[in-house]
Image (cartoon, rainbow, N blue to C red):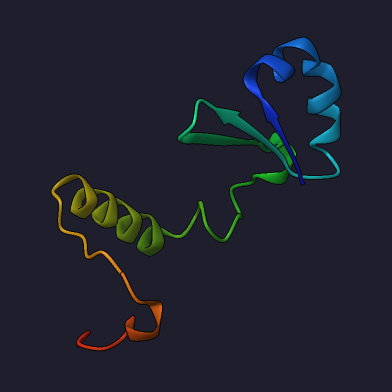
Length: 85
């Protein structure tokens, strides 16, 4: 995996698009956002993640929970499952 800035991506776009065929290319945008270049040929309609309606529905529900503030902060990972029913 290689991580680059948006400035570096702009300077060498062709290089990183070619590189993404063989390895992960992650773009850091600011301090909080990251993106990954994925060649279209690696994403297909048969992709087990993008074509699974149950998974997509669960992801949408999770995004709604996060937006509504229905989250739990984990302060001690050794106690992660304690109290979860």
